[in-house]
Image 1 (tube, rainbow, N blue to C red):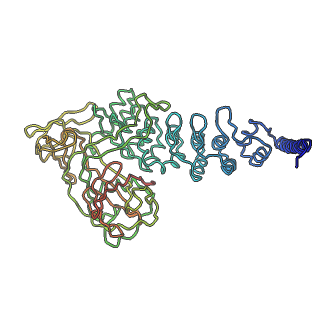
Image 2 (cartoon, rainbow, N blue to C red):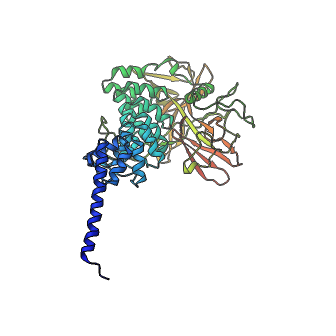
Image 3 (tube, rainbow, N blue to C red):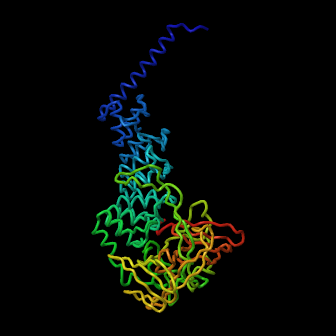
Length: 531
């Protein structure tokens, strides 16, 4: 049967008439709501979180994929406005949650830059990917750090374990003290370094950020760390003309700063760093092991220092933030940090031999793929560099440089005392060591063994390496019970399911442990008090 052409024309005419009526009706209703069926009206309704109007506009034939004058879609505009209902409406209509807009930004980035932390949280819960980079190579976390959006930083930090050190270096560079505090709570290390050896404190000092520098010092950054060229945070501040900041950093270079901390002092400082973030257990463990905050007459253990690495990757090559110096580049290879050898003695109240409970979903439970069945959480790392450097050892005589303004050069021998301190020199000698800095070939290094007459604490200082007030240690936590222990290299422990582990290495950003039965080596990344 052949349909006459005039019937087809009638059907089409009726359809078009119906569409026009529907559009006219929608346009009238939209106008009554105070909007226009235009791109301007569309984005105005998006910003106003007016979902009924958005629904009418779409029903009236408006193209919901329309971009604004900057090249952003409706989801970007809704995210930047904190319009959650509008976001939900758009996502239900299959808008891409990670759609790229102007400058390669995602809706999550738009929320970060608009300082809408509740929207940041909501988008992350809807599955937004925090890892994409914009056209400048910046992730949402770095945008939040640079903009000082601290609450958004806290929302994003748990998704960026591997980027926290880079974020801390940036926060120090731009002087965001509250962001620094948050990042370290989630596991960023104050011992992170840029490729040229600058630490977060050095960056803050060099750029004149007093509050940021004070925050870093308060949470354990070393004022005496040096770059490969010998610069310190103080000297960088002086060179940049920030004399008041340099004086603040210098304060306390002598007296009790030039001292060795006892086991109990270090344990107390580490536990204090965690503050009240986790409720303390009231009863001792079944196996009678002691947590780090329980030290009745006992002494804390010390790690035997070994070479470690700090990864400060995370920013793109050539990328700059507002106010960042042109040499700010944290991409590239990890930074190696050789540490002096030690002869630390194992003592009581350690993780050694402890029966660590199996993880049972406690606060702070591990989530990384490489850590999902490990029984420990690394909460804190601590080492304390002193304002003294062993310049040379020769003929039983040690030449030391003590930092200050001006620095002092002194010579001491066995039986002598370091001026202005309670440190007595026990031995001055040389020994042969092998290290990666010399391609494994044996080299002779000078050693100065000192004792603090206040508490009997002894350490060895090595020529050409930082002098420490105590060896590096880590505070770890039973992932199931929340009990705390002090960990060091060489310690053994048994997990709740009967597996035996040994701590191979303790580094500023991670602990390396080995399962003795299988020989499998695993790492626990620094989580921080809230990580």
